[in-house]
Length: 357
Image (cartoon, rainbow, N blue to C red; front, top):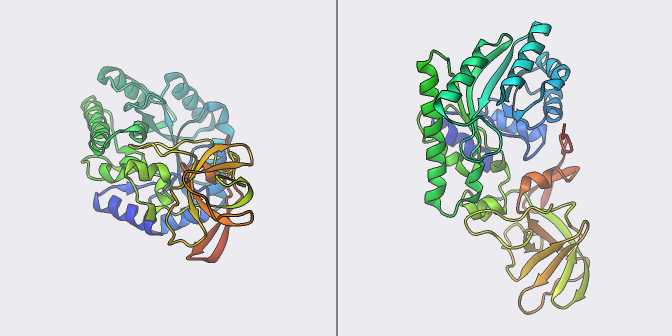
């Protein structure tokens, strides 16, 4: 709740809307908490996720992911229920969406994805090419261009706070310049949307941006701590695990393997070692035990090496593990337990888990 409130306050203070990405928690209930505190809508990665949140009554959904037009029937069904927008970064895809909308006599809101340095999706930020692409999109019937959208994923691999600030600054400047060029060409740019938890608190101070789309901030994780986006006290999701074996004085085995913690390694300015940080015991005030390192994962086994001395942990003991990446952990489990201290308040189903199409 503190994480939700803090990010909303930062966005509001910066004069921007907050549209959280729900791929982190995949829970309509948590999304509702975000909306109740001021979020303008939500983001989903896949149509399947959007369908789950639409079923829960959430009315404004953005898909900042390249959705192929062969999904037109599912998109049309969503348009009957929610205000929907998606991104495009390819002329043929834009044309196919235009054709689909014209056949259905519908109109689809789209944003053009800009590659701001992560080199994943998005059109190149070259002014002439970008303006030509934007102009082409505005000419297509059945589509309404809302603006520009980006994701500075390179922010997760910076080596210093100055470099992180540079990523946020360069992203904003790149988008401002492109928006200005487009407007001079007569193209309406209503929105400039950026998305990354790592840069969110920096992006809210940038002029002309209209929206931030962080997702991980609701839980944070070990990588965000390493980046400097959060402290250990901010991290709201841990995996409760059981010691299932102690084959040696300097080795214990947990029941959380790659099917729970996933194989994601730590990212950030100082890359954390291992596959998660162990807090011995279940007391939320306990600090991580740096003598315990999860060095290896099998599907169902987390191999923990005791770095010095021994450990008093024995089979049957419980520990909490702060994962390297909370978003993927959410997708691996059916439920989360909401706890206040050591009291279980409620059990929430992860209703959008596994929605990969």
